[in-house]
Length: 388
Image 1 (spheres, rainbow, N blue to C red):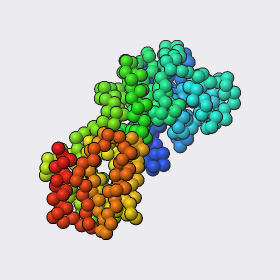
Image 2: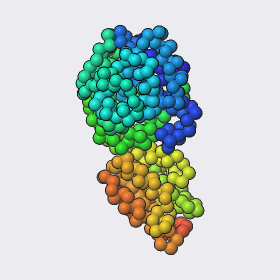
Image 3: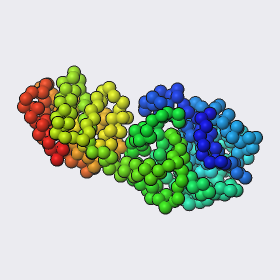
Image 4: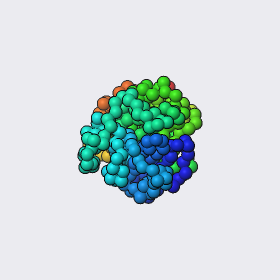
């Protein structure tokens, strides 16, 4: 078990999973993922969420070691997604007197996951601002609907000033991964929670006046220092504000000619003083990371081949994904390629048209198969306008 120190009477009992290839069957996790779970030892012992069924045996071992022969009195269900709820029924069977703490949506959804005998007698339904004393600890509950499921709630432990944030402030990567928090937390946020910026803002406002000394998420490291840094990141991300001054060039190229145009554009932008230029091949690179970069930078260049009177599918997939995640407040420039009937720009603009507060920067550049001196001049003019 990874020895993670929370507080003297609050034990980490979670588990790392380094064998899973795709989180939620879609996100590449080269450094694995942690399923975090916590035990508050008190007059009444409280488990804060369970873990994925992939790691049940290790989690039960961790729990029993931390309990030291005692029983579980309460299980707080922050979030019902299976990577956190898979062992609810098992825990109910193991500790028949244990009570379940959740909200009305928790208990509306719970029977869809498990058939728990005597559920009505076992449940403790909490509402916004309700508190439960466990002896020396007081737990206060705040509803966080659609961050990122309807039943999500967070818990503030008043004694140690700890906020248990469910999937909020989560991060890809096992706990023993030595890497900066930002990149994998950003990729996690925009791909999983990003659609719900308004709801994240609502939660941040609810907890703004709490004295928070520690943040305990359900994935990733416990945050103990410089908490204003992490909270500010979430504030920026959930407002859909650009995080960095830079240009993200996303290209979808069939035979390499559009890729060449994208690389030429990157060269021109750097020559003209762009602070940061990032180039990604939408056909080959991790789509989740491309989405992360689209939200990170304030400017984006879309370069795509025409395909079947539309746009090459990797670009269409990318645009529909960022639109679904409420992409907004950015400058977008467009480069299309087509040998006989260029159609990529039209399709891209149709999708972009449904996004909020987007400035389309001209001129739109059309390449007929390969770049030439005329199109390079157009790329130079487009680069100047992007950087204005």
